Amino acid sequence: MVLATSACSRCSAPNAPASSSTGATNTPTTPRPPIIEVHGHIGATAYEEALALADENGIERIVNLSGGNQARGLERHVAAMKRHPGRIAVFFNVPWQFHQDPRFAAEIPAAMERAVLAGYAGLKVPKALGLSVPGPNGGFLAVDDPSLDSIWAKAGELGIPVSIHTGDPKAFFEPITPQNERIEELGEAPNWSFADPKYPRRETLLAQRDNLLARHRNTTFILVHFANNPEDIDYVDRLLDENPNANVDVSARLAEIGRHNPDKVRRLFIKHKDRILFGSDLGVHVRKRKGSTPELSLFLGSLTKGDPPTRASVKTFYDRHWTFFESDHRDTGTIPHPVPIQGNWAIRPISLPEDVLRAVYHDNAYRLIFAPHFARQGVSDPLLKKKTNVTLDP
Ligand SMILES: [Zn+2]
Image 1 (cartoon, protein in one colour):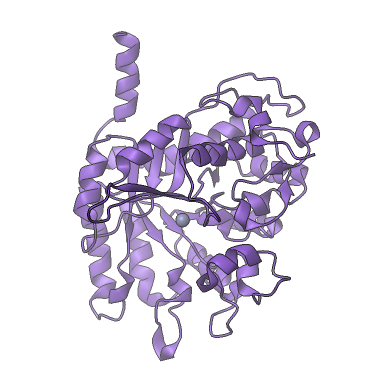
Image 2 (tube, helix red, strand yellow):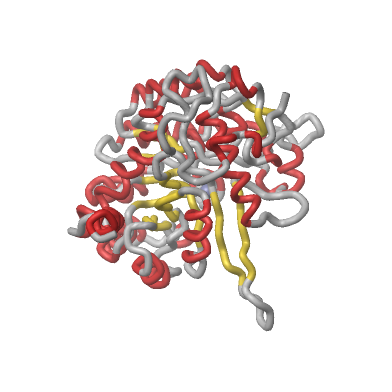
């Protein structure tokens, strides 16, 4: 039986109770901890809209991976972030179009340093590295190209994490045929296909990325999309075992993670509870067309077929995440995954113990991103101050 999202009693309100630590029952015990969303893409003019959605879904803070750089958007992102102290951490984007410039290797680390001084909290690297940034000899720039070492080293020196997206789902590297299990999505976005042999193979890209982890032990990496290999959770287990500087986010990959044996997935989350971060790949932009009122544009882990997503879709999207992490498959059977276009199958929830939920939902992101950010800025957490004020002066 497929459980409709609305049937999850604990998912009806933000800060609703999480499941019991035994995982054997749905009896609520404690409230859901405040959530940190580590995988957001928020336009510089959409911070207020993004935070309104966050409030509606029990999300306390967002990491905006689309912070741009000095050439594009930095000043606007800094101004928007300062309007909401402590709620949004902004990550720097490397301007890859300048990679061929001989000054690149020296100037990018310097630009990162200036961005961090301005209040940026991390570095985001997109799949373009490996799959579209031009490299030597007419190919693509390898993820582990030595010309980029100064960037990874600088991130370590500054104490900022690197969220890196390398490769893509296995099905995106297979031919677009009716047999391809992500055909619906590839049909909407054919340019997401890397089946053409001109692209490096997925294993090659992942191996390049994994080289970085070993070469830059002083740098903290967040490998987005479950290290982009949720298809093989033994690989993710090994990767985390072998690389103390590696962490993963779960963004836009519950469809794959939830396909495995739920007890095995649960064991993986418990074993690596300090290394797995909650994120969803939420995109929030405000589109302004001349002469018409600004429109909210939402991205929920992937493209959406049919009507564009609404605030209500965002609620369903997040509720399906909470159900996956908090419910027990023995009670619910299979449930829908949060991003329907990612495949026509259901997943089984993993009923994480409360300490694991707290780490994945909040504590890991706080430790890796927000706490060091506040320390660098020489400030105490503005939200903590607010909470204290509320207690002292109701
Ligand atoms: Zn993303």
